[in-house]
Image (cartoon, rainbow, N blue to C red; front, side, top):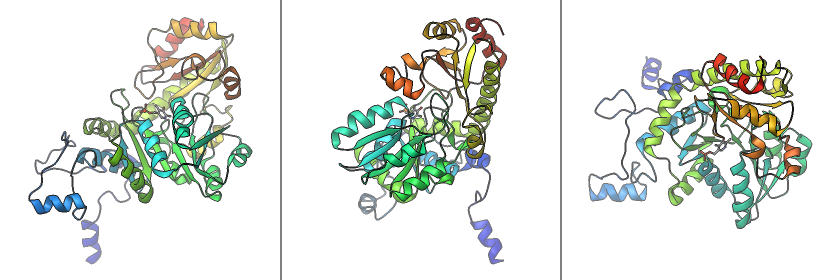
Length: 402
Ligand SMILES: *Cc1c(COP(=O)(O)O)cnc(C)c1O
C-alpha cells in the first residue's frame, strides 16, 4: 500500500523517454488550467504582505522577486532542458554567447587558463582571446581530434576545457569520454557546446562532460525566431552561473523561453528529419563528379564515423563539401542556388549555404585556415527540412549535371 501511495505521489515523469520529457517536463499550470505553457510576460512580482516581501528578498522564502532572477516561463524551459540533458539543473540566458560568457565569468578568475578546441564557433574564439584575455584569463587552442595536443595543452592553471562535437564546418568528432578523463585528471572542467546535436541526438553528460552549453537560437528554436542560450549540469556549478546572470543581467526573455518550449516539443522529430535530409544530400554529393570531398560524419568514409555512431543517435543537419576548383567554383555553386538561403545561420527549417573561408572563418589568417582545413573550395550547408529533391536540384544549378 505504502509503495502504491509513493508511486502515485511521486514524479509521473520519472523514467519516461526523451520524447515524453521534451513535451511534458517542467510544465506547471496556473489556476486557469491552461493546456499550453503559460507565457508570463512580467518583469516583477507582487507580494502578499510586507513580511512575505522581506522573506522573498532575504531568500528565506522561495518564490519570484524579479524576472532578472526568475520567471515561471523561463523556469519551465530550464527544467525541460535539464530533463533532456539528464542534468541536475539548467539556467537560461539571453543568447548562446551569454551562456558561454556567464560560464567563464562565474567559474574562472584572473590567471586561469582555458584549453579550447580550434574548431569552435568564431565568436567564442573572439570572446576568449579578445575579451577574457583583458581580465587575465588566457586561452590556447588545439586540434580537437589530436589527443596528444590536448594533453600537451594543459597547464597548472587550466580550469576549463571547451569543445564542440561534431565541429563546424568539417564535422570532426571528438571522443568526449577520453577528453573528460584527461580534463578531470588535470582537475579542470569539461564544457561541451552541444548546439549542433542538441540533447535529441547526444547527451554529453553521459560521456563525462561537466557542463553543457546551448545556443537555443539554433535547433532548439528550430525556426530562426529567437535568441537564447542555456547552461546545464550539476546544480552546484549551475548555481554559480545563475549567480552571475542574476547580478549581470543576461537573463532569458520569457517570450523567447515560451518559443523554445514549443520548439523542444518537436525537437526529436526535427533533428531526425534534418539528419535524414543531410545524410541523403551527403551521399548524393559524395557521388557527384564535380565534388572533391564531403565532410559528414554520417558517411562511413568520414574519419569520425565510428565515434559518431557511439556518441550520437543520428549525424545532425550540418555538412560541408569541397568542389573541384577553387573559390570561383565554390561561389558559382552558392550564387546559383534559388531555394537555399545564403546566410551563416543554422538550425532552421530553411536550408542555408555559406562559403566558410570568406565568411564564418574569414578572420583567420591563411595559415590558420590551412591548419583548420578551411579551403577556398569549401561550402557548408545546414540542411533544412525542405524536399530533398528540390535541394539537390538547387545545387545542380551551379554544379551542373546530376
Ligand atoms: C550560434 C552559436 C553560438 C552562439 O549563440 P548565439 O545564440 O548566437 O549567441 C555558440 N555556439 C555555437 C556552436 C553556435 O552555432
